[in-house]
Length: 69
Image 1: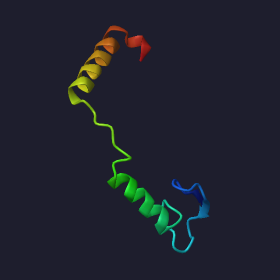
Image 2: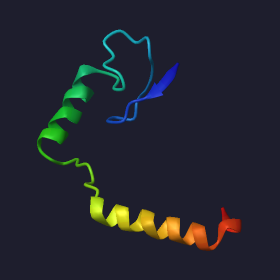
Image 3: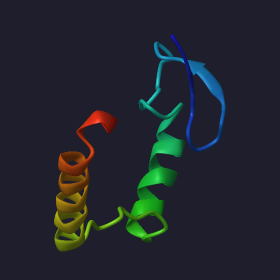
Image 4: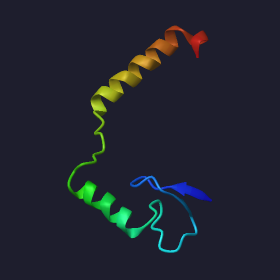
């Protein structure tokens, strides 16, 4: 299967010797790890209370307009 490295963009086969999936090499894998450690990447935090409010609003709207579901 052909893959594309998310770091360098190089196309490579998943059976490439030395591949560190989903990266094409250990070098690209280490670049990615460094970016995580330097906090260049982040995961968005979900505001639980806001999410619960939005769900309640959607449920209320669905109860008012059941034909829209």
